[in-house]
Length: 193
Length: 265
Image (cartoon, rainbow over all chains, first blue to last red):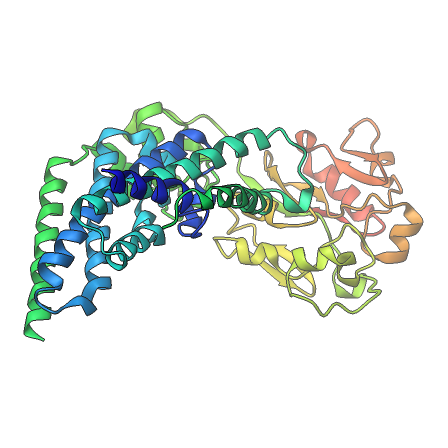
């Protein structure tokens, strides 16, 4: 149990995928201008991450390893992720058209979000067991959502700030992302791994 | 080899099956009218109507009754067909044309320095107008040409020229021009006259840097003060587009303009 909590906290806060590994920066900058859509994309990504972690764990341990096909792991993982994203896209389109519109291109782009491929590869690398893998996926998703929502909150306030003209838009966003990353590095000592 | 291929095939078939099943279950029913209208729209997603894409526009037409006339690209017949489909009547409106408010060709311009940078207007505009003395005129590097979805603009002798036959008034070039000299005007009457200059410089300065610019001499005003066809303000003459219902009169004024800067669009 303790191990599971550690995995969760490590994935979501101390080793936050966006702010310490710098994975998945594209949606982090692209969808963080409104809290609503940030939460939407965060939940969608969390869902994909959790399921992807579980499915890839099963495929890796019951198919790739026994048949000596580990060299196919990248292809396999991408197939899993792409199918999941397709599924999520259909689901969101059916259940929440406004969210579907707000996310736009970033929804299918979850497929190419390196945070998710990174997650599955880390999971293999660190030899997690099945339960740990699921928690790891969930934690990474929560961490991603957290980073996105914090960023969106800041950017909404930023609308009223006087930003120097050359830094407007992407420039100031990247600077803030850097500061946030610095702040998150402060958590680094809590847990290692 | 066989094992790897077959295992990938099994995985692919499995996920394809799941997705096919999900597609059936989660299918979103779209109003068939949206697709029909979308097929009639030009499909170039120029955005002149104010919506994200042609499909988005079609959706708004069906669901929220957006104004079909906002699309300036479709041909007359298709527009009529669209109005017919939605059971609406078209309100009268005038075609909009993009007019280049500069008349200076290379021989008219005074060049103070040689520009060797990126060959775009926005680039040249950042470094002292790419060496061109006039702060207002056309840079002639063709940002508007590249952005035009209809191939209606070309650069001739250092001056952008709009093919008014091809121009649909979508307005893309307006925002592409770093100097803001392209303006959209409604063609309300048979002929449309405009002043092809944007310079607010004083007479002396304009004369110095360009031989084709408006020198604000006021002849266009003096020739017919009652008509009020033109107005000189900030060293620049500006036509009153609402009063161009008398083309012969303006034609004579146009002939009298000393720098021939009044053009017909």
